[in-house]
Length: 248
Image 1 (cartoon, rainbow, N blue to C red):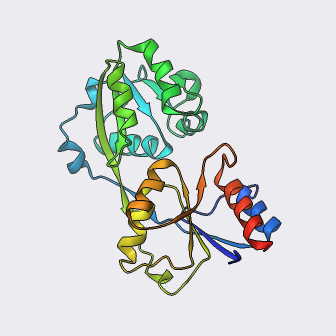
Image 2 (cartoon, rainbow, N blue to C red; image 1 turned 60 degrees about the vertical axis):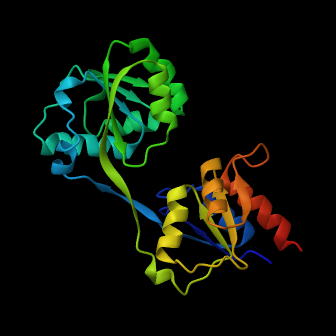
């Protein structure tokens, strides 16, 4: 069956140069965006319940903009003045750049990885004497604590925000040719919103091995997968799939 409509389970891109818009124009398909999950900050009471003293740390590991926002939110709510000497270890340049929302970049000790968490550990390794805090979501990839434990660091995790299923009830009678997922949480949201969901002719596109596994365990057939050598990005995977099925 031809592909005419696609729903991407993420917020609509803020930039007009998104490859999804290029894909829509190129293949003449309608692409909609909708967050299947969203982030909610934990309360001060919940954070205090984790019994972690912010005064104990000399360095912070920041893996996302959410981690940045919620660390500084909770610091303010707990009346904790972040020391000027605090060291920041950011997973990517995008996270480091976002940090400028809260600190004067040139006056702080900021260390940046190239992209993945494994890249960042190479930088962290050179500062093993620090006491590290990891602001986190309630759903943390096992890779991160595993990598930190391998280094033998003095570190603590502090959950500051949680991933929550979004209300999708208005989509109950809306159907798309392709649904695109980027995390197991997105798959979970689909079935929490629509417990009786049947795939039928809907194609499922998934990004990452953990998402493939979650979709398969939920009884879904994954028609489009990325990344792969042929399709390093989801837009490329969609493009190649649409070209193949729409020309028939």
